[in-house]
Image 1: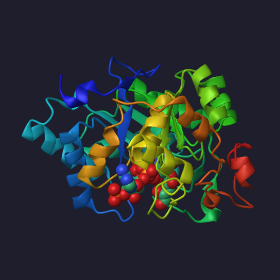
Image 2: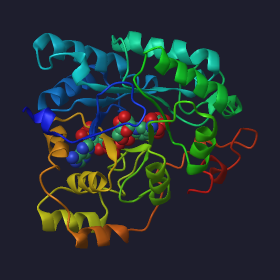
Image 3: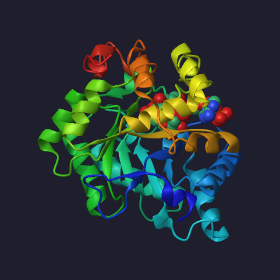
Amino acid sequence: MDNAQKKPKMTLASYFGHQEMPVIGMGTAADPFDEATMKTAVLEAIKVGYRHFDTSPLYRSEKAVGEAIAEALSLGLIGSRDELFITSKLWCCDAHSDLVIPALKNSLRVLQLEYLDLYLIHWPISCKPGRLMFPMPKDELLPMDFNSVWAAMEECQQLGLTKAIGVSNFSCKKLEHLLAFATIPPAVNQVEMSPLWQQKKLRGFCKANDIVVTAYSPLGAKGTRWGSSLVMDNEVLNEIAKTRGKTVAQVCLRWLYEQGTSFVVKSYRKERLEENMNIFDWALLKDDHDKINQIPQQRLQPKEQLVSANGPYKSLEELWDGEI
Ligand SMILES: NC(=O)C1=CN([C@@H]2O[C@H](COP(=O)(O)OP(=O)(O)OC[C@H]3O[C@@H](n4cnc5c(N)ncnc54)[C@H](OP(=O)(O)O)[C@@H]3O)[C@@H](O)[C@H]2O)C=CC1
Ligand SMILES: O=C[C@H](O)[C@@H](O)[C@@H](O)[C@H](O)C(=O)O
């Protein structure tokens, strides 16, 4: 069994087919973004055993991911595309029922793939069609028509363009609303999660409804425009890392794994890609969990940019339905 096959996987309730999602995925939102560096990093990741990649048209990383996959196939690093689990996302400007299928087809074209494993609604908000950007002008924010957008997502799965569909940045209330009319329930909710924002309520809801939680920014996205150093500099986590002879990044990722969530973590560097994978053959102790449970909670990415006096969400309370 090679290194990749030994890594743990999770079953998605409404995945069309037999493949499972590897717990660890490589994130591809980079700041700064550089296409050549990203392609090299994805290829390195495949070499060290990553099989799950998270991209989005917003990140401009789909092309690099697609080129790295094509190269990995031609080098024989993987036998076939089916060995990979590829996620992409529907950006807000395409979150209109008639634009969903064309947006997914465009992602597939850029990725040079026939299908995705998972397609996610990136945010529970739409914006004026045409411009793929973040932040978008506040006067272009629009409420999402969840019923018709989700129906188009379901059609994507029925057409075989993606094996599973899901959401990102959805609160319990928004998931509940979606579940009330969905024919195909969302397989995944990808949300910010780390020891500093543990998402206890949301995880309980998702577990009860067979929705896999995928953690994004598991290291707090230190060094990026959207992140902070609060996770990596946290004293409790640094102390646990020292006692266990692990790094803070490994403590965070191991903790996520022990919570039963999958996660996507980004690095451009080969040694960190490997470090972040080396979390499956040791465990945190009860005492470590007790300490992590006590860490004061703080959402690191509240996204004020999506809140506007005239928009669909007038406050962060409304965007997150009080889960803030
Ligand atoms: N659905 C959504 O709305 C969102 C989804 N995402 C997804 O989640 C992925 C991961 O989250 P992201 O925001 O990138 O943040 P992460 O928490 O993964 O942190 C990434 C940062 O940590 C550094 N890093 C990685 N590994 C280590 C390590 N072992 N030790 C020290 N530093 C390390 C990286 O630097 P370097 O590259 O130099 O190693 C990078 O600066 C994204 O790339 C994206 O795919 C992210 C945000 C929102
Ligand atoms: O530049 C901004 C960031 O990428 C921000 O938009 C993210 O939080 C985004 O939702 C993502 O998925 O990464």
